[in-house]
Image (cartoon, rainbow, N blue to C red):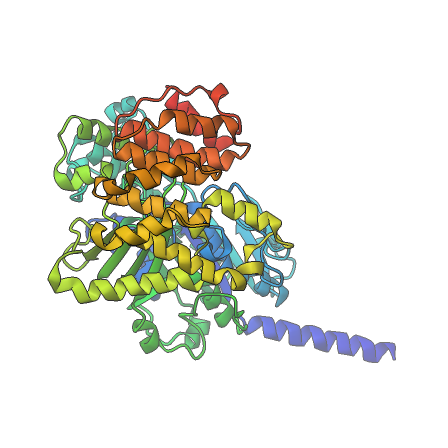
Length: 613
């Protein structure tokens, strides 16, 4: 009996090992904050990266790979869940409220782990959602596939290199004056939205040097895999975690913020799982929501229904079908203390932006961004009147929507809204974006303090519990802010109704639309003025901003009242975001001391730090 049991255990171990040997390993190598524009493999103006190019020689180059968000925590949460962030409520960076994963939903490495994979991460996480307990066997600066207890066990290892992070460009002037870059600043390409100055040339050259450091580290990590005899059993993904990092990239859903480099080395042993020749390029669009489902497919596992992405590699995945994919969606909301709501859709070479708070300029103060000399100089040149219209646009209000033809305008400088030749395409992309906005529905329709409050009221802490019942309400909210897309005379009667609506959210978005329309909506002054007495703080805030844009009311007493009386720091953060706009863009003067603001958090303190300088 004992002998038979031992035989069974041995046989079970053999079967388990055999199954493990039939499964590929996965190595993800991420570099922080770099778009595809910084690698010559993707853009002729980029840096040479021979080690990454070597991976491409035995794999696939993805010409159209996208992060769904242009900042770390939102991008990485999308990546690890396979779910659009505004659907979960994980779209804000950095998180004020950590969102629980809905019951039964897991981060995708957990499915690999439960199927027998060793999962390790070295070491950045930065999730805006609660981590599934079985996500990682180890996540630390010492984590490695080499630490798995059974060397025949398949693994998924995720490695992040931080050398290209935005902070690598936070150097003082004396560094620029005294430290030469390996890349000759005279040779770098300066795109049209940036001025051609020594500061920008040095900054670009320094970043090219960072990409060379990344490339060397990629080579060293791949050498470890080769030394372990695992190279031809392992899919290697190299990609950026989003774009960056000069003005208008990280934190902005432009191509420079979303379009990432992606190379996948295909191992000889598992090349039958890929319907493409090694060394070829893929033109189909893939996004972070697709990466987790792709690994599950390659591992022979089912893709959970709640995931929004589709596999782009794996048994039965046709490369013809992948190459037919031509849509990618992006989102940008709060970045640290800077608020905005922007959604994008790219279809082929056309890119559509919906700027829901278009009165706010891109260049609105964000303390971390403005540590960079290039940011500081850009603003100085703007105030000195030394920028051309394309460059100066960074500090001016945007149009509520924009359409760009990337084939002719890769840096998104010429808005084609209003061009009759593009009227049909504009309508098509607008409808695609609106359809996506409704389908989640997008939780940014609830201002962040309201979203957090409602999530906390749900039994599991996730708003998805109540989403089906709430969808009609969200559709109504979309309607009011979309009035900003119409000529004012066409929108006037509906805006007037919105300003008297029974629901504060409808009033709020109607007022946002009025702010976007600006002085054109001046005839609604008296209706908006009534909202200064509204019991809802956000409606009062937005009314004060609209009247300030009209130059009909001093906003300071109304906004200071909210700052002193509310017990919600997230409401204060939204108020202070607009105070900075009113001060820096419209010239209103505010006197605010930290003692004047009752409820504070880290982001509020950043705003106060700037305002009290």
